[in-house]
Length: 421
Image (cartoon, rainbow, N blue to C red; front, side, top):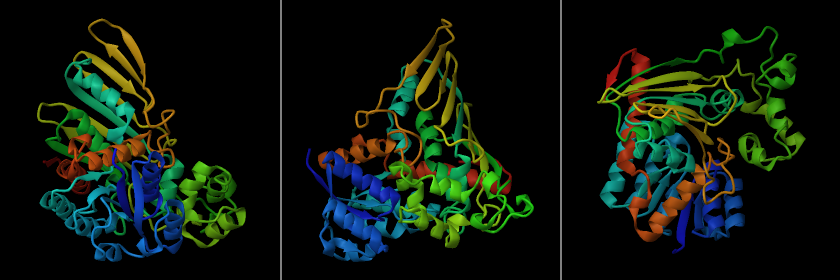
């Protein structure tokens, strides 16, 4: 396969993940990076052998040089996707775009229009479509193993510490600086559910709120920072316990610790907790996104689907139940339990590892989202190398459609209505 050259816009966790996968397989070569953080740029220059004059502080400098690669990875913060994606599409780059596409429907539409106008491939990083687990579940539906799909229950167990890290203390804690949590965290769950049904829902409703991480729930005597707090040793959201516990574990140092500090010593972590946002009491932050949400969907044939996103759980693989006219499937991210109503037989299907991995991976960003990160990257590079967009499991227009379901759900939650799509 022809080696695909890549420019990476946004050299954080996600950009680095896709770049490393391309480099590891030899299917892609990173030739340029744009990121305002000089440390991140230096990592890319050293790790991928990028020429120093191709390491830019901003995407504008990259774009000013014309097209220098076959494709671009756009992995900037959620609110900074639109301008680089449109500009690079106009230069003819194929684009791997981190989810969500953008934080507003208007801007996401601009991106999809740019992809269509320029005839480029644009893959949104809905990584759940690219796992062996998803292929196995879709295969059962397509083969008619449970008859007609009538109802789906889907749970995303965000994890108590992940909620505190990303959505209370971290970058995605506020809607006005990031996005609603359903969009930031779960747009690929909604995309995945639409992928299972093979069509968008006809009607959507939603309920949810910020129920716990508020000043009203702050324990008596709690300090503003964990390092000063007498309650910290028994608090489930102890920052010292979480982040000091990452030291020495390469996976945990990659995420979540890299968001807290670039350092890898106890002193580095303690200084970050003393002065930075990740050392704050979870009941004394400026967060406003939900900590639990339910989305209910009805399809044009009467089939229904419920999606639950909850902070109050361990961080585990997603759980899904499929209810069909002739059978039932219960999936936990690794295995599928199939019950056939016609025979009464039960079958447990252990999902094989992806070809790209030696085992089914964990659910987190550090674990590759169950192999989805690798599967997506490989498919995108193969599509660009061959010119075959059919290797991608969704295009810009389909991704825009599933994002619109998310925005409809948020409208329903905020207005207390059922929204018709």
